[in-house]
Image (cartoon, rainbow, N blue to C red; front, side, top):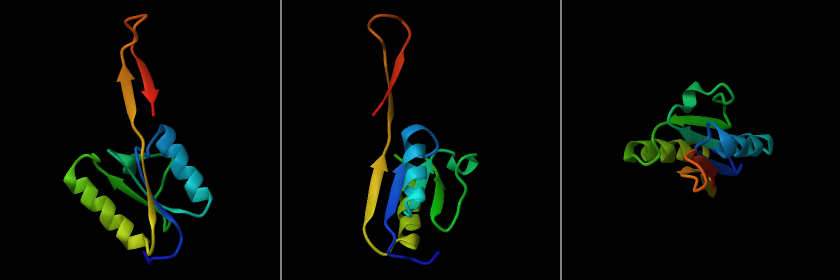
Length: 103
């Protein structure tokens, strides 16, 4: 992929939730995106394109970080934005049913 002056974002957790929504919104606005999650290549919503690189892997692992930065370098000629989305599971004090909070 040739590098361009288009803005580039790296989005972790891009296969669902906030990460997926941000990825889609940035693509619609002309950004190039490196999207990563454990199994993003199986995504039904995201397909690789000149503006979208999908990287499978656990983001906390060095191998994945290397793949992501290599993918970013292949499409970026300038500055980037990195967005990490996380989901947390907190036990609820009022019941035994846990609740999920996304930050």
